Length: 378
Ligand SMILES: *Cc1c(COP(=O)(O)O)cnc(C)c1O
Image (tube, rainbow, N blue to C red):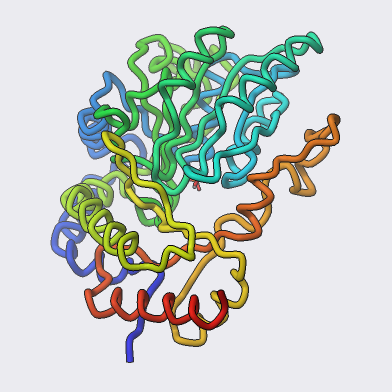
């Protein structure tokens, strides 16, 4: 039978084994483990892929968010808006800086922040004399958020727009590359992301020289121009040279992998029964398919059925941020309202395998079993 993997990093590794071995060995030989030449080489490649002036690497996607907020002087008492249906790091990074998150509902079609709800909440916070400072947009599952609207709203209310592109590096929005869609963009190289290393890693993208210089200072304890001169309160958050070397090898197959996942996604979307709600496809905007996520009112039954047939599934994310024990105190729900789409999605989504090493027969088997589950339970 099949041995279907949710994600197959082993097969990926085999396909670039030689380059990985060479790149890692080079680092061991020169032993510049922190800020070695591979880090600059990678940053140069990343900025070219994103078509931006600067890429600053760092220790994780979470740190990329924290560094960005520090670089924008976001801190105590500031309000930062973010979607509720996301990975916890989006909210955590806001709280770490001392700022207060306001959770915004998402669209059921795109899984991304709803700009209409966002604008309503900005107006409300202004009426309450709060200090709105920034918006964090998340490109969930690899699909860029609505940057046209979000940039307009950010401009109208004088807010900074931070893009959390941890899941969307390599994607396009209105024919522009992720990394170039807002003032500042963060990504993650966690192993399971579209571009992953063999540990933690991240990067920040910007066209602003001042922000770039501040990020470079902040990731190294807030250093100034002279040695041991500290000009800001910073972090220790550099990308290890060995991880940069691994990413350089992964970049060789990055485009091909993205194209493969896109091909698989199109097959899923045309062949999976319409009784499941499938992800939206937009023109001029591409997803890198960090996940292929469908919705079902019979989720538990369907995933049990699939798991019994040896098809792995995941639930991203079972709890929205406004219901997390650590964050829910920031969600007042004062109008008796709720974030109904975020709640709905947390109860109904599940993700199925989508990776470049999934074979045609494996994908056919997955589709067959999903459609069988539909006949049995829906
Ligand atoms: C993975 C992820 C992060 C955090 O990245 P790490 O590298 O794991 O710290 C932040 N936001 C989103 C949306 C993510 O998916």
